[in-house]
Image 1: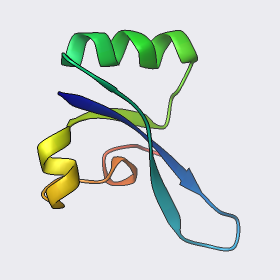
Image 2: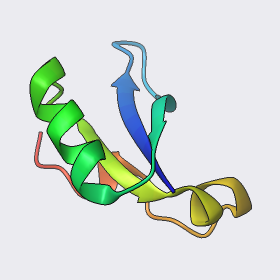
Image 3: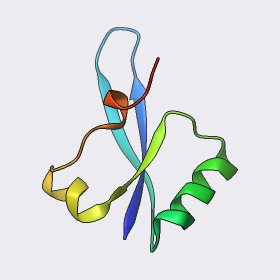
Image 4: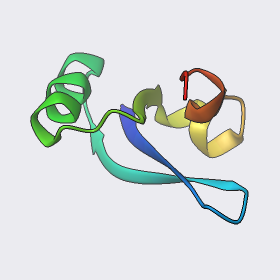
Length: 63
């Protein structure tokens, strides 16, 4: 299972990662991300996200 994670950064500083939805495959997750027009988001394995063993989306994206 994969989580669609959206990164929200605030003008005052700091960022939060929000889980938008969960999908069975990474392909389904990526299709949904494109359909919703989410550019500051990513698809991550749910097990890694829940356990904290993942790289937040804001470290992978060029702002």
